[in-house]
Length: 287
Length: 301
Image (cartoon, rainbow over all chains, first blue to last red; front, side):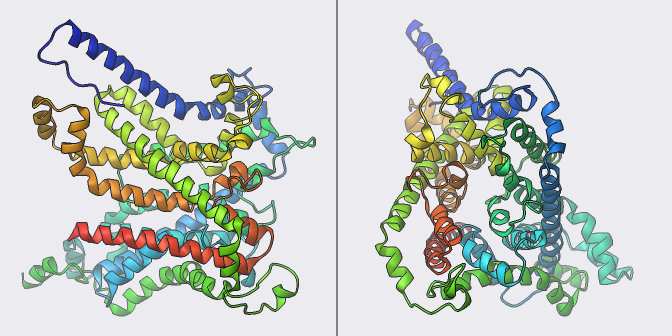
C-alpha cells in the first residue's frame, strides 16, 4: 500500500487518471484494513442486544433481556466483583510500592542503583507468566495461596512493578527539586514534604501507572486460570469459559451480555486516558 | 546558592531529606514482591528442571533428582520440537511479518487521510489491542465459526472450519489482528520525526514511493524497526492466547511452547519436565532481552 502522491506538476490527462486510480486503490486498501479490524468486533456490538443471539452477526431484534441473565447465573456477577478486587488490589500494590521505590531511587543515591534498575527491567521482560507458570504455580501451592485472589494480585504486581518503577523514576527525575527544598527551608518534615509537595506533583505519572496496572490485571487470564480452582473466586476472564447451556452449547445470550459488561471498563479507561493525557507512547508498556 | 548549584548538578540530591534508612525502607516492599514472584520462580526453575516433580503420586511427595534427564527427554521429544517449530512460525508470521508490515503500512498511510478516517482506523486497531484476551478469543471463535461465522459468510466458504482446517494460519492472523496497534503507534511516532523537507526534496528529485522510503524514511526509523521487532517477538513468543482459540489442537497442530508447557506440566502434571521446558523458554527470552537492552544502550550513548 502506498501513500498517494500529490498531482504531478507536469499535468496531462494520463497523469490525472493515474492519480485518480491510485487514490481509489488507496482508499480500497484502507477500507479492507478497516473491515479486517472491524468485522470480528461486530458480534460484541450486536449480539448482546439480540433476542436470540447466534454466532451470526446481524442487526439485533432489540432486547435487554440478556443482561437480566447475568443475575440468574451464580458466577457472572461474582466474577466481575472478583475482577474488580483483583485489579484493584494489584493497582494499589503497584502504585504504592512503585511510587515509594521510584522516589527513593530518584532522590537518594543507593550504590548500584542503575544496575539494579536494568536488572529489574530485564527480569520483568524475561520472567513472563507463561515462561514461569510452573514455578509460580508450585510456589503458590507451597505457600497455600492456591485459590486466593490476593495471591493472584501478588503475582501480577510482582510482574508489573519493575516497568512501573522504571517509568515512575524517569518521571520523578524530571520533576524539579526546588519545591521540596523550599518546603524543607520552611520547616516541613521529610514525610510532610512527600505528602504535600511530591505527591501532588507526581499525580499524572501515578495516574498513568494506575490505569496501566488496572488494564493489565483486568485482562489477565493465565495467572488466574492456573492459580484459582474455585469458580466462586475466579475473575471474569476465566469464568467466561464456563458459560455453557445444559446441552453443552455455548450460552450465547449470557456470553454476549457478559463480554460487553466485561469490556466496558477497559474502553472507558482508554477513553479517559486519551482525553486527559492523550494516548502518549510509553516505550514497551504492555506485557 | 551553593546548595542549589549542587542540586542542579547531582540528580540524586536528597531534596526532601529522606535519608538512607528511609530510602531503603521505601525500596524494600517493591523488591520483596519482585524477589518473591519474579526472581525466585526463575531461579527455582533451575532446580525443578532437574527433578522428576509431579503434581500427584509418589514423585509429588518425594521428588528425586534426575539430572539432565528432562532436557534430553525434551530435545529428543518430537512433540517438543514440533512446539518449538510452531512457535517460530507463529512469531515469524504474526509478529515479524504480520504486525510489523501491517502496523507500518497503517502508520504510513494515515499521514495522507482526513482526520476522521484516521480516528476511525486507529480506534479500531487500538480496540483490538486493549480488550481482554478472553473476549477477543471468543469473538474470533464466533468470527471463524464453521456454520454461521462472519468470515465464512463474507468469503462465501460456508461450512469450512478454519480452526480445524488451518489452525496455525488462524492463530497467526488472529495475533496480527490483536497486536498490530503497538507497531502502528511506534511507527507513527517514528514517522513524525522524519523531516518533511527531506521527503519533499526527494519527491522533487523524482523519487518514487519506494525510493523515498528506502533513502529518506528508513534511515530515520531503523532504530524503531529493531526495537519494534524485538519487543513484539518477545511478547508473541510468550503469548498464551492461542490456548483460548485452539488449546493446541487439533492433534498438536497449533501447540506453541506456552501451550505445550501448560499441557504437559499443569494439565498432565509432569512439573519437572515442564520446568525444564520453562527454563529453555526463559533462556530464549533472555537472549532476546539482552540483545534489546544492548541496542538501547548503544542508542543512548
